[in-house]
Image 1 (cartoon, helix red, strand yellow):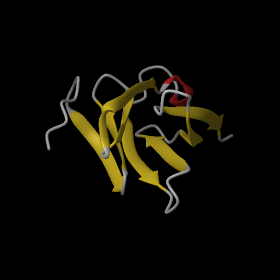
Image 2: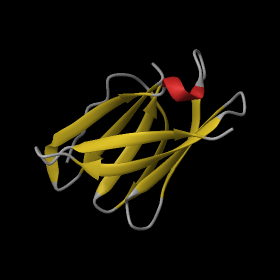
Image 3: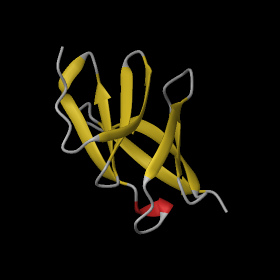
Length: 95
């Protein structure tokens, strides 16, 4: 299986069947490995402009993931599937 990323991947996490990857262009890629057509690209603006993604983590139920940047900012995102079966994250910022 090959998954093409738009840019260099700086951080990633995998819990079957979900893969999340943070790329050099400050985007988060969410992929359902059971359905390769479900790749979603999400902007990481909640980390702040020019905040490079340093780490990502998915919870065991694949319903939430956390993202953190080099400058100390972080957020949590709930993940649900939309009617097309694609992941649709809902972002929550940590203060």
